[in-house]
Amino acid sequence: MTEAARIPRRTTGSTFLHPLSDQFGIPLDQVNFVACQLFALLAAFWFRLYLRPSQASSGVRHAFATILGIYFAVFCFGWYSIHIFILVMISYGIMNMASIPNVHRYSFLVAMGYLTLCHISRIFIFQYGILTTDFSGPLMIVTQKITTLAFQIHDGIGKKAEDLTSEQNQHAIKRRPSLLEYLSYQLNFMSIIAGPCSNFKDYIAFIEGRHVQMKLLEVNWKQRSCDRLSDPSPLGAILHKLCITLVSLLLFLTLTKTFPATYIVDNQFIKQSSFLTRLGFLYVVMQASKPKYYFAWTLGFAFLAADAINNAAGFGFNGVDEKGNYRWDLLSNLNIRNVEMATSFKMYLENWNIQTTVWLKRVCYDRASWYPTALTFLLSALWHGVYPGYYFTFITGILMTLAARRVRNNCQHIFISPKLLKVGYGMVTWLATQLSVSYTVAPFVLLAVEPTIKLYKSLYFHMHILCILVLLVLPNKSQKLTRRKQPFEMEVHSCNKNKKQE
Image (cartoon, one colour):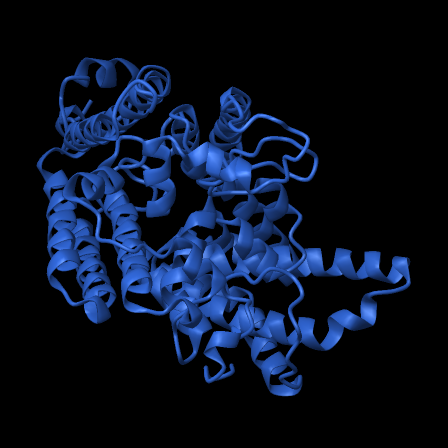
């Protein structure tokens, strides 16, 4: 063994579990991360059973969630966790001192600016790739929460109800939160390590014990005579998410290593394979890369889901579905079935990294007066980091989204009937969606400029060219949206009639 190999990888957090790291040969920072998520799950069960609203005051629940969350951050990231606390406190000062007409602007600029500086610094400090356990992950989640809350305070205090969309009205906040409420929302142990971002109103309702009942009252319960319904158990939802965890982990340990992303830019492979072979293998490699993202979003890069941790604490209930089953997907970040069966770029985006997509919609798409789609994708790239591959992916995503919208608006109505034609159209659009997504997200996995350009050159930039041709040839027809509006694919809302059409 070389001298370099004997030197342990530098960690920024606690060294308490160093013997465990040495025994299993796993980097200490990842061991710390997994340990925090394991302990968070146990703490969440305890929190729901012994600190329930009927037994503890809201102040006690806030304080416990905050203190434990701060401890987790320090345990995992050491003194680097101070970046999280600095940003949270600066943003709290802005929220209280800035004027309501500007509170959302200042909060957004400061949070995104601080995050971007940290993204730049971590490249030089850690030289990490994606899905690693440095402090920028929690900082990204905190940035979402800070900006979401600032916009909702601006809506609730600074704007009239008739100037807001129904969704903005629903989440608008009529008062500035107290310091304890703010710290609990930002730093609670259920989400500080791996998210996800939640609405402030939902979180406060959960702490105060109103969360589940609020969701149940949204359903027609005329057949029930009691005023208060018993809270449903999250155990089934937790077990389901842990099953996804195990399957994703198995696929991650097999497929991802069997089909490494670097193979699609291997010189020998490019020379010896045909265009269709390269395109097909790109799809296979991107499919093999997905489990680690499923693993990350379902587990929070540990062995237990951040989503499941919130559910174990009693947070994340989302009412009842059309079959009468309880839903625990309020904070879910991924719908794997809809992702794999997506027949449009729109459907894919709606079900991939859901909470981030919702955040982008609320702070950018719904509010941008000019080019909302382009601005939303660029914000997403900036939020993810400063690796060039992110910008290749999201700029390509702009073209893909606009071209897919143009094709759908011009062609979809032709294939409504007969049924056989509709089925055929669905199969073609599924294949086109999966291939276009693989083409678009490849730079996100490759990260660097050189392999990205090499890959696109080997594929003759065909998707870029097709998108440009579609935008030049097909007319820009508008289509009335009868379904629920979603980010990146929405038509202009009635309250924004003067927004420039794309």
